[in-house]
Length: 269
Length: 127
Image 1 (cartoon, each protein chain N blue to C red):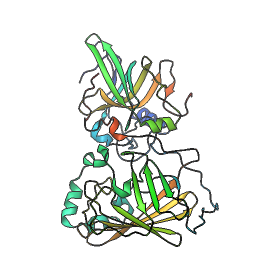
Image 2 (image 1 turned 135 degrees about the horizontal axis):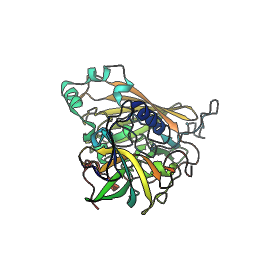
Image 3 (image 1 turned 60 degrees about the vertical axis):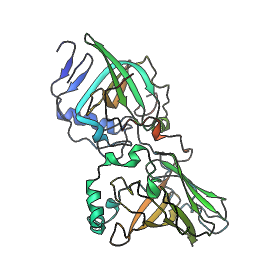
Image 4 (image 1 turned 45 degrees about the vertical axis):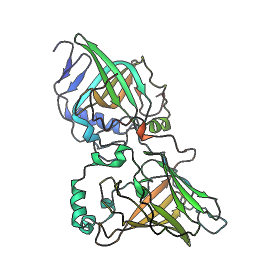
């Protein structure tokens, strides 16, 4: 083949060494399948651990949860439960759907919102309490994907009787000591609960318990109740990490140039 | 499979890679059994999300081939200190990566090297 240089065989050891080299130098470390994509992870660098640093408190007696965080909702539920537990809780239709789902079908990969769990995914997200003291609203501003927000009402209101189902639902929050409890209903089924495709129905009811056990850590314990999809409620725990100082939410619109729905076609100018 | 000037296709599959991806299903789009190396001028830069794309042109006696190499998001690149100006139209680069399942020219980048041999978009900017 004239003008073509073909390497007929690569020594496996050389190949592996090169890959390790790449893996150490700025490729995305998220273990979701495939090989390196040059350029690094989406999320911001993490704040250095600060053992013993007091958790900030507000003058109203609540914990200050505000800040720029990363993760706290991206892990597939199956990984957070005992082996086999998630599937054992699924009703037959849900299990069948779960096992048929392929991540290429995930609405999140087509730039749609990921629901209340995944809004705190692998990108940066900012928790905003408004006003800071005696907050009536808490916002979670998502950097990635749909570049959107979730709002939690902390002014004492109740859920509406028949909320129109949405991507993030209707969330109300209250404090129990140092724990923020968020209750959410009113979710539709156009998103997947997690990247593995855990199904749910409009009967989904989520109760989150947010705490800040350390200065650099948020703990999020989520109880998922959906008698339309699961035989009983179950609880999963996520951890969010504080971003390093100096980082901010950056602009990111997944819809801008998502070539995912054009699966590796020949490029055109 | 077409093979053109400046294109090196490794003839063996790669073993033992750490599975990683930025946003989408890597495996659904790209084929680890299609490692590629392409050298040519950058003819278009899409500094966009969810991922950036660098278009490279190669030529041989059969004509011109346009390559579309996908890389990480703008925010991951900018957080590492690079910008839309780090690699510009007209720069000659060598990119290694993996070809697309449907069209090898629609590829994902794993390394990029400048004409003077500097590795780009890895480590610290300027290094």
